[in-house]
Amino acid sequence: DVVMTQSPLSLPVTLGQPASISCKSSQSLVHGDGNTYLNWFHQRPGQSPRRLIYKVSNRDSGVPDRFSGSGSGTDFTLKISRVEAEDVGIYYCMQATHWPYTFGQGTKLEIK
Amino acid sequence: EVQLVESGGGLVQPGRSLRLSCAMSGFTFNDNAMHWIRQAPGRGLEWVSGIYGTGGGLGYADSVRGRFTISRDDAKNSLYLQMNSLRSEDTALYYCVKDIGPGGCDLWGRGTLVTVSS
Image 1: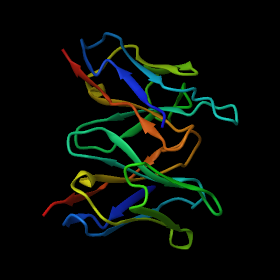
Image 2 (image 1 turned 120 degrees about the vertical axis):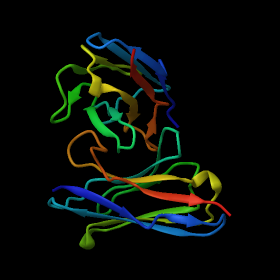
Image 3 (image 1 turned 90 degrees about the vertical axis):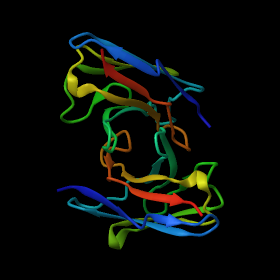
Image 4 (image 1 turned 30 degrees about the horizontal axis):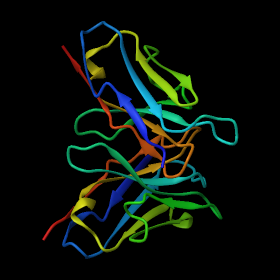
């Protein structure tokens, strides 16, 4: 199975400051169809996860443009340009290139 | 409103069985993949099983392979998870998840809680 490793696991951030989360996979996430199926999710306490980014860098509908995804191969990053209070929660990367799909451990973002 | 609604969770003794259901509504059904993803209390997300559309494949996490069976009834817009030989480590909130657009896993239900305990 593909192992997804996130860092950091805890991310205290001051409001208005940027934040960055790294996600590394144990093997390439480039699919045979040429796409890279790396998604990012945000989960607030008591809520279902919500997908923010799909295929590395595509924002889902309604996701603020302060969120951006980048990377290739085995190395990926989620960036928040200016953290707002509503961004608290846990962020997960997930690969959907290889079955079984696998998630990172999660990164808990909190406001300092 | 586009939604997925899970049902069938509950308290069950170790070694027993449970069947989860997921009903889809509010959109034109397609045969994109559907998944069960679970989250143990206070833990992260774990993909459990997935199934593609008509004639497509299916897969399981190692932790449930041989015990759980995923199926879908396209005529009823429904997804199922038959869970046998349940263990305490299967205790979790089980989410029904569907691929709507590109990328995968973009529509999530609210989850149904399964508790395995004597």
